[in-house]
Length: 520
Ligand SMILES: Cc1cc2nc3c(=O)[nH]c(=O)nc-3n(C[C@H](O)[C@H](O)[C@H](O)COP(=O)(O)OP(=O)(O)OC[C@H]3O[C@@H](n4cnc5c(N)ncnc54)[C@H](O)[C@@H]3O)c2cc1C
Image (cartoon, rainbow, N blue to C red; front, side):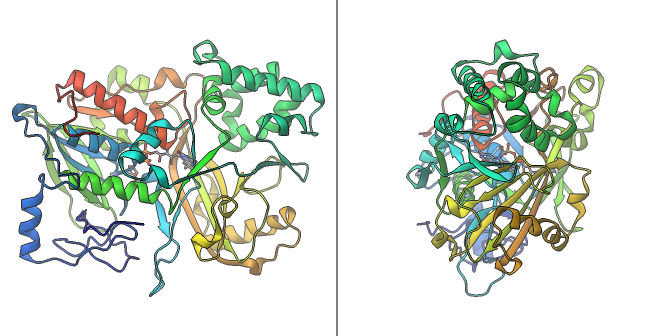
């Protein structure tokens, strides 16, 4: 299923789990692609070969363009889908690129983990840290998957998506299921269907700007629709800001999404490993487990990037680049680039809130529900959504484990983010008997917990006015992040769309070559 190329990353990763190590000056960089078999080489020959190959070797046999004064050095901050796509496109245009990623592996919010990590002699099995799927409308993601040779490994299904209301499970993922949705009156159902049809038919949300989701739903779909279906979802996701959520964002959620869902066999981490390998193969330098601490303009032009190992006390170091692109959440850019905190720019764009994501994942020895996705609309549950991943993908992909995510979006100050996994298990598990009365705690064989700050911007009505442009007041410093994909909801697809838009912008503004050399 996966190739067997050695992969060379630079950084200070201490990630293990794969019975391999990589060509690394220090042997600290032990991250490698799941299923990839890397070769242990830390010798001078390895060093020399790495130097020789830098910028020359590429699996597709392409050579990066040596374009004289068109060739600039770029630092890309963040090795999620956005940063890696930007890096790939820059390399395809002959630019020199170095990616800095705080984590020990690529993928950002869409990265995975090895279910068998630390278990000697067992093959790695990867699962996303946060539940992920794609939609048939995610054309940019599908196109990039095609470029990476993974398109045919996306599995498309229509797994049951249900909502828990008043202790009952209702399927609510099609026109037919809406018509049969008894918690609402027949008129309420028709009004809800009408509202959804309007949002689907509207090609652009332009006319919806300035309105809030809650008011629009109450007006068009009715109070019962809001109170039963949409209100609990908005409150669960945006807490106090639920009533202020911008209607164009809701348009995006309804308009962009298909009932058919796609999942990459082996997990989305494979996508990011392939992307990282491709970037590396084209001469890009990947610095994992390396956090950027500061970006500052240089007196003679260009920018300095100061970084240090993400989880050790090794000293920071500073490198100079012609251009820097940050894909970090907007709030983090203010921290690493203090020169942004000035004048009109800061007044307009240093604004807004973000919420964090939290997922408890449990592996059971048997199924819990008959559904893939369960929205929890009833009060009193400590989680917002239950995603039974193995009601989409087969348990045989996971050595028989039945995998369930219990997910939450919470303000980053929420006490949940400070709790240990055992505390969270004790709090969450008793609620599972409400979903399956037979459930016993000893069905739980393994568990994992993940949290991410700044995982969802709070998209209130004024949000649009405060979306920063790509260019910043610091010459050569651009930002591109998921806060800019509005009115679309953040998602892998829209980060790729944004990456392509940034490249188009740079080709216009910065005179990098217009045509990607050797790009597909
Ligand atoms: C719970 C949840 C469910 C989701 N479900 C879906 C789904 O079903 N489908 C879908 O398509 N999308 C989904 N998403 C959204 C998707 O994960 C994101 O939109 C996408 O991964 C964003 O990618 P990005 O590269 O723009 O940002 P990120 O992935 O956030 O990348 C930013 C990177 O910057 C790194 N970084 C931060 N600080 C520093 C620093 N100082 N120095 C260096 N690096 C740094 C981070 O480690 C991170 O890797 C979901 C997200 C969450 C949280």
